[in-house]
Image (tube, rainbow, N blue to C red; front, side):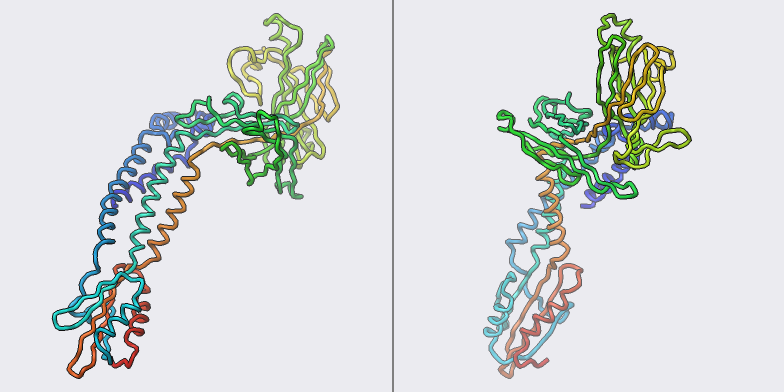
Length: 497
């Protein structure tokens, strides 16, 4: 048990870097920034796996040793407890007056009658009645075996919690996706449908629980100071036979009311805005895109982003890379001007506006390298391959005309929601283990293991001397009151102490 406690302390200590340092599994860019900022210290922490704490060799070793230690602790304790359950209460001590709790009375009645009354009063205790050599009769009683049972349940439940958490890390998965709240759909058919996806060790992404979600509308209510009050996404979903029948079922998705379907949970994490821009090229063709922009101020939802366009009808790749268009800048749901700079005064759509830079040239979108949808590649700007050709603040419906006749129109804005899909088939077992831990701990802390003995011996005057002794097998307070209450009932008839 001492080893298990030490390992449990080491496990808590080893988990601290996971809370204090950025973790690669949660936010790789933050890890890269931390390493770049702290130089050799950051690189040393990376080599020691401090940015992958819960997948590190040293954390796994402590976890495994704790598991082995608990098993090694519980097996002999379980066998010992089984022996205690089948063992009889110990013999009545020769001198009960030496016990911490004892009382004596001389009563009328035979030892047999008084012992029978004691046996009746101690119903529910484990009893053994014995006849002693001097003709005295005694009862040995013991109670509180549930204390050790609770202790064992607690530790077995902890062991179950460790096992189920480990299994959960193998078979669970979690992904985030942004969906426009204009009837757009998301289907859990593959990892490519997610913006980010974290699989368990045994998950390859080819056997995900099939279901689809359609986001019809998103409603947000705010307090006068801009603090969020309620978020609600009105969605439809289909799973199982509904997929083949193309049947949609409505659901109001809220922050603390996830959708549970197909063994998965769909959470509403956040929301934002996606401006709609239309670019009309000199040949008369137009392209319209609605792309989510990310909030840079979570209180006012001032957002930044980049909406990128390829010119139509240009087949030559070199020429196309000189005519690509990007609309970048800031979007404010409630526009305010501060020193001629657009900002937002409120998170709701009361007076939307966008401060945009129109960039033209090579966006790098066909280079074969991935890039963020929220920004342009600044190295292309620095090299002169991408240049700014216009800058203007736009209200919905307003346009910018470029020098070559291209027109950029700010059509309006659509809300988007961020959804998280979580799959963990072991969560029920984790919950059950946690509940059993609480129940077992409660039983081990509240139940008292105690013993009580009653001896009845005849005296020379034809009466019976009854002695009652008690001993608590734990240091918990409270057995004194119980003992005196029982002794008073056993010694009440014509009590003479």
